Each structure stands twice: as structure tokens, then as C-alpha cells.
Image 1 (cartoon, one colour):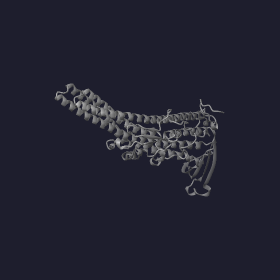
Image 2 (cartoon, one colour):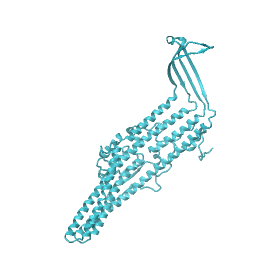
Image 3 (cartoon, one colour):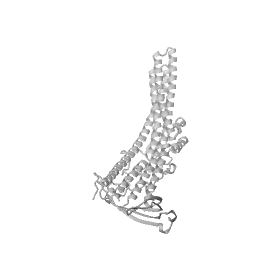
Image 4 (spheres, helix red, strand yellow):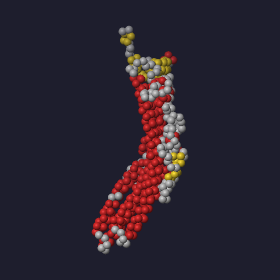
Length: 495
């Protein structure tokens, strides 16, 4: 009884964004190019494309030691045992019972002596699944187990993505710290130069105060960057399952990473069959569909068959005599007649729950496509930004070098030098941040597209369920009308 589940169709779109994306991201100024390769498979160990052995080692540590991943594995194992428990209803239930009773009976007004009754023997019972309620219950539990399997895959994908991101955050923060420290060191040299000029009578005291103010202001760059670095280190320690005080993250350097040149981009029609969060929502939708069948089957009769054989005697020494053998065979039928509308309300509640799960599934698909679209655009803008930041850095560096020579020769004032210093400082920090963001968005693209987890499922204890292949057809809400199950308004279907 109830509807047969049909997988939702993937969105019928050809592109992730409304405007066409360039096939090649070419920043210029000697910066690395990136190519989008549509339809290319995503590597299971995609983080190895950054060509950092230290990063790969940290990701492996995270996979082995992360507690969230361990909890997801245990939850999946629990769900699989619940499936086995549900499947047991397919088979007869066999039990063995033994008892000793002391009782007294009165007959025709005359008291009789108490007797002891010994009995033992097996009993078997079986409830035929005439209307498929058990099959729908098993189907529901299998779908929930699939959901947990995909939740585990999602935890793995999130873990690996976060581990890579925190490694890049550490490298980016260290690069920005290095730039800030170099700027402060240059401020110290400029202050010494201004003081020498002041002592020689070639500069005013206001110039010294201005140089001191610039140095003090630039030193404020260090605490936020150091905090950013500390947060990234601590977050990475937690990801690998270690206490921050007992484990120290490696000193990643952005220059040790290689920016992946080829970026595989899945077809939009394949994304809904790759993202574990979408597949988990689909499995939840399947479970909701099966629940409708469970509630419909409860509106029909149920049959129970039972049989028992054993021995019963008033004396232990005659318990196994042939005269003590007893047996029984019984059948029963129970059909609901009037439950005050409870069964109908239960069915309608299950249908409403299916509608809610369908809307949740559709929303997760929308969010997934939006995330991919955002990341693709981010990579395009990252290439543009790193190009402009590199141009600004080269220009400001040349301008600062010239201003220093002019100032040292006494042909320029301090304000011009400090203006050049400020432009160079902003350009160097901006370039370091743009580089780090480009690496981060590259990693985010791999995560947004599913990260190739299906080829690494044996590493974290999950597998693609046989009943839920990555490719397949898809639901229309009207499919719920099969076998007389009506959907709640406002769904309207032909016929």
C-alpha cells in the first residue's frame, strides 16, 4: 500500500550562472592561470592538487582522528542495525517457554488439593505482510540508513574542506604577518633616517613625530593578524582531533602551495547525484514516502498465525510421556472499524511530512547550485583582483623606491615619502590577501561540487547504497497519487 518512490529529477539547466563564465582565468602580471574543464571527474584526494605534502599529511590526520567523523560512523552503524531489526518482521518468531505453576481449583462446591503444573515447549508466530506495511517500514528504515550514510559522506567532505581551508588560512595569515613585519621594519628605518636629518638640522621635529606616528599605527596591524593565525591553528588542531595545547599546526607557507591549473566542473545535471547533502535530503524524502505506505497499511486488516507444541503435566516425572504432549494452531484477524479519525489523520500527517521533506529537498538543491555559482564567480573575481593587486604592488614598490632616493637627496618632503609608504603597505597586504583568497575559493569549488567522495567512501566507512545509484530517474509530486493516496492541496494532477 502507499506510493512507490521515484527519485527527483535534477534541475534542467545547462549553466550554473546566468551570464557565461570564461573558460580560462588569466590574471596577467605573471600570475597563474586556471582552466575550467566541464564534465571532468573530481579527484577523490583533490587536496593533493595543491602539491603540498604537509597539507596532505594533515588532511590524513584529520580523517583518522576527527571526532565528528567518528560520531557519524557510529550513527550510520546504528541505523544499519535498525534496518536489520525491521527486516526481522519478515520471518516467523520462534520462542521457547517453560513454567512451573502451583494452583488450586474448586469444582462443584468441593475443595480440591493444590496441584503443581509443569509445562514447556516452543511457540511460533507469524504475521503475514498482506498489505505491505512491513515492507514499507523496512523501506523507510533503509532510506534512513542511506540518509545517515550520506550524512557521513557530508561530514567527510566538510572535514577535508575545512582542513584544507584552515591550512590555507594559516599560510595566508603568515604571509600577511610577514608583510606587516617588513613594513614595520621599514618604518623603523625611515624613523632613523628622519631623526638623522633632524639632528643635522635638515628636518623639522614635526617630521619626527609624523614618522613615529606612522610606526605606531602600523604596529596595530600585528595583533589582528596574530589572532587570525591563532584561530586558524586552533581550528586545525580541533579538526585533527587534538587539543590545541597538545598539538601544533605546521607553519604552512603560501609559496609552498601550487594553485591547481585545471578546475573540473561537474555538469549541472550531475550535481544533484554528487553532493552528499542533496542525496541525504533525497533519502529523507524517500523515508517520508515510505511512511505514507506504513500509515495506509495500518488502515487494512492484519492477520496473525501462531502455533505451539510442548508438554504439560502435573508431575515432573511424567512430563515427557506421550500423554503429556499438547499442541495448538491458531489464526487471528484484526480489522480497524472505528478509531475516531485517528488513522486517517495519521495518513494525512505522513503526506504532509512528505510535502515538507520535498520542499526541504528542493531548497537544499537551490542552495547547492547557488553555492557553486557563487564560487565560480568568486574565482573569476579573484583572478581580476590578484591582477589589480599585483599591478598596484609593482607600481607602489617602484614609486616608493624612487621617493626614498628623492627624500634622501633632500629633494622631497616627508609627506610624499609617507604617502608612498602607505600605498605600498596597502598594496602588499592586499596582494597577500588576494592570493590567499584565490587558494581558498579554489578549495571551496572542489567542496561545492562534492569533492569526489564517492571514490573515497571506503576510507571513511561509507558506501553508495545499491538501492540508490548515483544516476537515476526522478519525483514528481503527482507520483504520490498512486494507489489511492491523495496529496494535500495545492498539488493538482491530471486525472
